[in-house]
Amino acid sequence: MMTKMNSKLGVRAMTLFVLAILLAGSVFEVSAQRRRRPVRRTPVRRVVIPTYTVPADTVIRVRLNQQLSSRTARIGDRFSANVTEPVHAGAGVEVIPVGSKVWGRVTSVKQAGRRTPGQILVAFNSVQLPKGTSYAINGSLSSLQADDVNSDNEGSVTGRSNRNRDAVFIGGGAATGAIIGAIAGGGKGAGIGAIIGGALGTGARVYEKEKDAEVKSGTEFGVILNRNVTMPAAR
Image 1 (cartoon, rainbow, N blue to C red):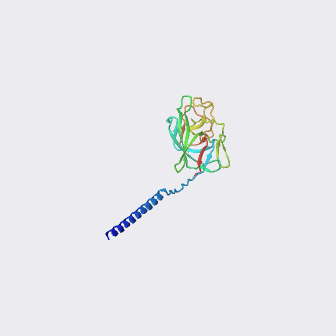
Image 2: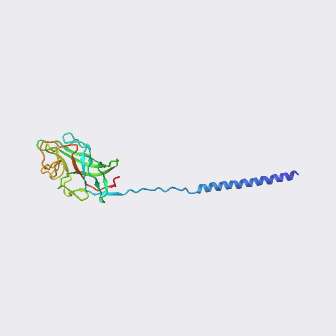
Image 3: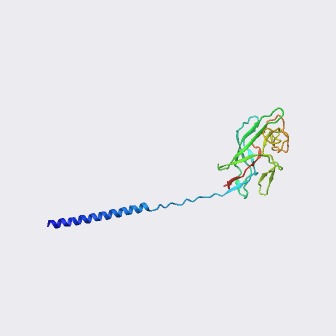
């Protein structure tokens, strides 16, 4: 009798042992399958924003936000001017809206002397759109006189390619405060000699000796691009 009971217990124990092994194997297989299951990654959709090119020689019409004076200006002084007319890329798409800011800095300054008027040489390095986004530019001072620029039917303004890019603000008459001109022969060290360019606000083309260049806030002038600029459409 005892032998039969022991035999039954042995069979049950063996059965439980086999079941435990099978269960453990199933759990291991499920775990392995979970580990091998590939992770599904959600594809990232990249939004491509089209860009447009504003060609070199384009003239941006701006209005000065603060006064510049050859008597007080220093090399490195920063200043800004508001864009007064929209700028369009080659495809006719508006990229620089009215209200954008063009930022510049003083690169050279000379006070008026006994025989020479004051001079302010400037350069422009960025344009800031109304929403705050900025783009690097390489721009120079330009006159807005009719014979210094070309205009097309879409309102785009370009500078004459043969114009001197070393334009400066030069001391002018009492009515203007300054004119835009170029040093004869080019270069910062050249003498004034003949003046090429236009007066600010008048048709005069003369400068006044011994007078500092006083470019008043609100003065309108042009910024001519020396290189192409690539930008998205204005929003």
